[in-house]
Amino acid sequence: MALSSHENGTQGVGSQFASRIAPTQSPLHQARHLPGDFYTSQETYELEKERIFLRDWLCVGRVEEFEKPGDYLTLCIADEPIMVVRDEDGQLNAFYNVCRHRGTEVAVGQGNTKRFQCPYHGWTYDLCGRLRAAAYTKEIENFDMQQYSLVPLKLDTWGGFVFLNFNPDSQSLLEFLGDFPEVFGPYQPEDLRLAIKFAIEYDCNWKATAENLVDIYHLATLHASSFGPHQPLESYEFQLKPWGYYGRFKGVSPMTHDGKPRFDFMPWLSGEHLEKGYSSHLQPNMGFYARQDNIHYITEWPIDANRSMALVHMLFPKQRFDLPDFKERIKVYEDFLHVALEEDMSMVQSLQRGFRSRAYQPGPMSKYEIAVHHVMNYYLDKVFGEQR
Image (cartoon, rainbow, N blue to C red; front, side, top):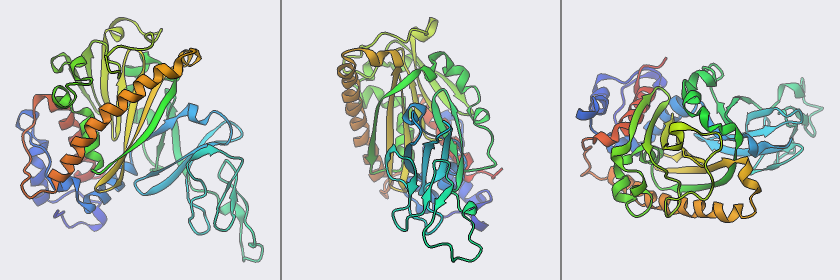
C-alpha cells in the first residue's frame, strides 16, 4: 500500500492515495468496497491504532464486572495493555497495565485483589495506582515513590457500560455518544446485568468482523437456517448517525434457535419498543443489539493486521437472575450465539483470504449495505482524513 509521504502520519493522505478511497466515499448507489490491502497492510494497521483506538472512546466492560473493591479486568487494546479496577472508595479507575520500573504487566486476566504487585521485581501499587512499595530503592538518588504511580487513562460510564479513552484531550463521553443514550435509554441498560460473556479469535482483520456485524445483506443467505428468517431485510428502517447507525426492524428476534424468547419482555418497555428490535453500531468497534428481552453487544479488537478478537456480551434485567431455571434458559441463548458467530467466522476468514488474492477487485455495494458504507466512511475519515 503506497501512502502519501507525511511526517509520522499526521497529515491527510495525498491525492494519489485519496483516489483509491474515492469509490468507497461515493454515494451508496455508486460506491464500491475497499481494496483488499486495507485489511492486510501493517502500515494501515499502525495508522488505525493511532487514529482510532488511541483517540475514540472504547467500551471495555460493564460496571457489574467491578462490583466489589479490588475487582479488576485487563485487556490489550491496539497493543497497549490496560486494566480497569474499582478502588476502596468505590471509584472505577483505568490505567496502563505497565509497571513504572521495567514495564512488566502488573495484572493478568480478571479477578479481585488488594494490590497489584509486579511479578518481576515486586514493585507494589494500590487500587488507585499509587506506588506503595519498591524494594532496594532507598539508595537511588532523588527517588520519589509519588512520581511512579501507574499511568492513568480517562474513564467514564453510561448505562452501566464502562468506556475509556487513551486521549487526555478527547471530547467527553456524552459528547461522543451524541443521541445514542436518547435512542437506547428506554431499554434502561443500567438496570440490566451481564449474563453471558465469551471471547472468539478470528484469522482476519478487525474491520472485516466489525463490518460483518452491520451487514444485513448476508442475513438471508449465510444465516438462512439460523436467525435470518426472523429479520427480513425489507423490514429494516435505517438511521445513520455520527456515532454509528441503527437498523430497526419489526418483530421479535431473540438469539434462539426457534426465534422465541425464553424470558418475558423488559417490564419498562412500551409502544414500538415491544414491536421492533434494533441492530446497531457504535463507532468504532461495538455492535449493539437491543431486543425486547435483552441487549447483546460485541466489541471487535485488533490483534494484528490479520487477526482480531471479539468479546461477546449478553445482558438481561437483573430480576431474571433470580429465576430457578435461569442458567438453563441462558444456555439456549449462549449456544445459539455460538452457532451464529461460527457461521460468520467461516465467511470473514474466507474474506481475509480473498483480500490477499491478486484476483480481488472491490465490488459495488447493495442498498442493504448502507450501514457497511457508513461505517467504512467513518473509518476512512478517521484514518485517512485531515487530522483535527
